[in-house]
Length: 167
Image (cartoon, rainbow, N blue to C red; front, side, top):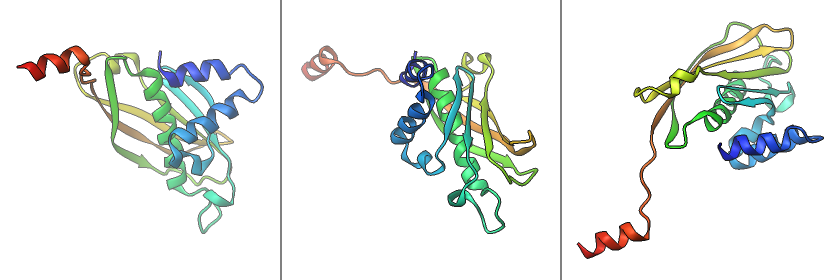
């Protein structure tokens, strides 16, 4: 189990635990803290967080700026990836495709989802479905964040280093 998922499971049942987790997640990846995400769900293949509509994430027309929403979607995707990636693999974002079907005139919930079989094949590309919904359930941003998932390199331990230096 990943450190992120272990921390979520430890804190989630505690008073203010999800808020503490959200703060700690923002410290690990400081750019995500700019939208002040509040995680509400974290499990393999699914993550959800909310972003409050406040002055710091609004645009010139008084709605939530789509880049702030995309930042929330990427935070949800990152938490999902950490909770889901097999221990022998690593991941990195490769790209994002999004559409903006409606204005975000309220708080939004950012959701990231995958299917279990996406993580078990040989294809290194894993598409993560993402969407952001207004308080009334209307989808305001939807799309895909593409991940590149590859085997972790083997770490050189003392025995490996000693053997290679004597060759």
